[in-house]
Image (cartoon, rainbow, N blue to C red; front, side):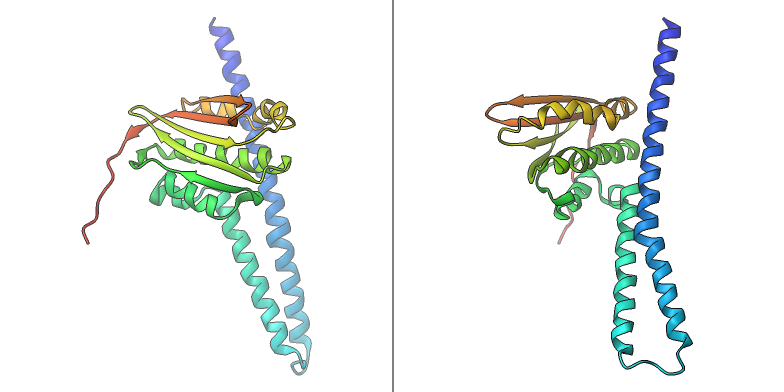
Length: 226
């Protein structure tokens, strides 16, 4: 019994390590493609400009191009930082982070967000993991399979917080990929680490629903006087 539990624990750690390595590789590629290459290009352009005895006729246009390149790198850098750990989760909570996320039309998927009237308190580790899993489901399951619209709903009871990702209509090609994608993303193991679980339901009328559940404690909303 003890050996079996130890083997399961070792397998869980191995899957987690593999997932972290995949994430690090993806982020490394983004840093290289979105930041390093642009910095090299900018450095080369500035070096060529400094080697000119006098500014060229299109100097102002060149400066504008460099400014645009710097702004693009800044946006890419903020995107990478938010992918690692969105600061908004720590500052304003999971609901605000999800609102920011759906407003960005993630991966080309138009998401409708439904939030409870009363926010819930989660440990930072759990909130970040729940947000990351929701983002992975949208970017790695829905978007690659042509899903253009989805509903994300955060629901709470006295002891459970549930995050539903719903896709309406019939998608016969999507359902068989759900289990495979969830397994590839180690969703079950990631939720297990924060005492959570996942449930997948498919209905002919209501479409596909992926529900993430995690223990939560209720936090009373703070009202601010005008």
